[in-house]
Each structure stands twice: as structure tokens, then as C-alpha cells.
Length: 354
Ligand SMILES: *Cc1c(COP(=O)(O)O)cnc(C)c1O
Image 1 (tube, helix red, strand yellow):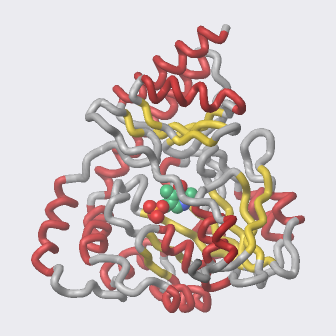
Image 2 (cartoon, helix red, strand yellow):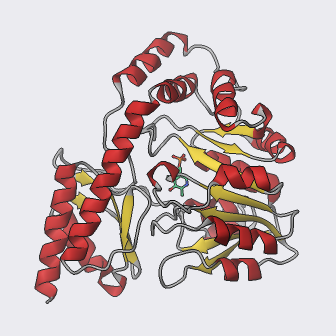
């Protein structure tokens, strides 16, 4: 037996979305953007290929300058990573080690407990409210003198629920100012709630707030791996120290810059996905499903003990989703054709049940 860290024995393993076996499979299991990359983005990446014998710039200079200008923040408040999951790892590694606690809602993003335990820290998982929102009262009450980091997921993966500005203000008033609070906004572009908490606004107003953004979802760069945090200067400096060296490739940097240049086009696609989300959720509600309000590019069905049975029917119909046994099912919004298939299969199931 090789001596390894005992903490890893109890650690949940990350379950990747199922891999489609045929072209006809609707892969709605990883909240990916169903649209192909923009031609302008593909061209920009192609232009970088001739330089892949070189390491990328660790400073991420061009993208850093663009984002700093856009959000009107110090460029050194930014830390980049190979996807925001790597930046999440930086945030935990910089704040939390053996004996320290990381508070987050549960169920929420599957990476939270994994990255927490990988860094030797202890996850404190606070159950969601019955309407699928974060229980911010209970999360504030869970703070101890061992708490080093609090993660807020807005909108929450997998339930799609959001939190308002007023709710987050009330929460932060109860959190000691030396504990970092991270607002994970992986789905911010899909969020149409007018009074939703805005991460950058909180970053500006509080000295202990960081924001996590990704190019994976709305911008459709999941396969290239690039995300970033906007964090207080003292934190961002440490995030860069613990980051994986050269993790953000030149291709990813170039694609992100090209995406910002093509933002109007990308936003139009996001708008279409939001329309599809509302159409799909509306149709399922009309068929008798109870679907909580979602502000992400996915929706949530709390199928409870029926989860495996419902999931089996979806798989039979060539629809791959993320199922959490005994809890519920997260379905990503895909192409209109794939969403139609979801509506058809789930509506039929409802009729059989009645
Ligand atoms: C998808 C997702 C991410 C982003 O992952 P990347 O590593 O940037 O691809 C971060 N947080 C949440 C809540 C997510 O669902």
C-alpha cells in the first residue's frame, strides 16, 4: 500500500457528463453551449497554432487589460486559470488548509467539496431552502472561527436559483470582514433577474468579496479551459502564487480575447438560449411538472426517489442529463430540437403518471 492522504478516501469523485455514443444523442449533461464556436474565434485560435512551441504568457497581458478596463478594476485584481475550476482551487488553496472550513450551499456545484477536500480543508455544506435557494441565514450561522472561505453560487448550479442584492447585503453584514466570500457567477450571462446580486458590484463595495467568472458557458469555450477571479489585491496576489504555471494556454487567451471582440454575436446566442429555457420550462410546467425558476442555461427537476426511473427514460430517448440519485435531475438547455425531445419525453412521463 502506498501511503497517501487519508482525507482522499472519503472524497467524492468528479462524475463527468456521459459521453454520447451516436450523433443523435442530446448531450444535456454538462451545461455546455450547444452552438459551434464563432468563425472569428476559430480563426483567432488557428492564428496561434504556429506558436505552440512556446510557453504562453503567464501574465495573460491582453485579456487582463481588456477585463480590467471593462470592469474598471486594477489589472492585478485578476487571476486566471485553466477554467474557473482551477481558479476555485487557487481560492481555496490561498485561504484554507488543514483544519479550516469552507462553507457552501448544498446541493451546489459538484467541484466545491472535491476541491475543498483536495486542499485538506473541511467542507461545511448548508442545505438549500425548500424552494432551491441558498439558505443565507443558515450559512451565516455556520460561520465559526475556523471558517476561511464562503462560496455563493449565483445562479446556483444545479437548481438555477438566484439571490438578490438585498439578501447578499444582509448576509455580508453578518460575515466577519476577514473571511473571503466568493460569488461564483459561471451563469451570469443567462441571469435575467432584475434585482439579482451583481458580483462586481459586491466586489466594489466590500473588501472581502471575490467574483468567479468563466468563458466556458455563455462564451462556449468549455473545451479550451479559461476562467478568472476578480479578487481583492492581497488575495489576487496569492491566487497567482498558487496557480498552476502556464495553465492558461495561448490558444485559450486568444480565444477569450476574440470572444470579447465578438460579444454582440455571443450575446445574441445567449438571448436565444434564454428564450429556449423559458419555452422549455413553460412547456414542462404546462405538462404538470414543477420546475423551479432557473436563471442558468439549465433547469432542475426535484425528482427525489423517481430520479433513476426518470433518468432511465431520458437515456432511452437519447437524452443525457445530470442525475443525482434520490435528489433530482439537471437538464441543460440545448438546441431547439433537443429541447423539443426533452419536452416530449418528460411530458409523456407525466401523462403516464396520471
Ligand atoms: C461550469 C461551472 C464552472 C466553470 O467551470 P470551468 O472550469 O470554468 O469550465 C464554475 N462554477 C460553476 C458553478 C459551474 O457550474
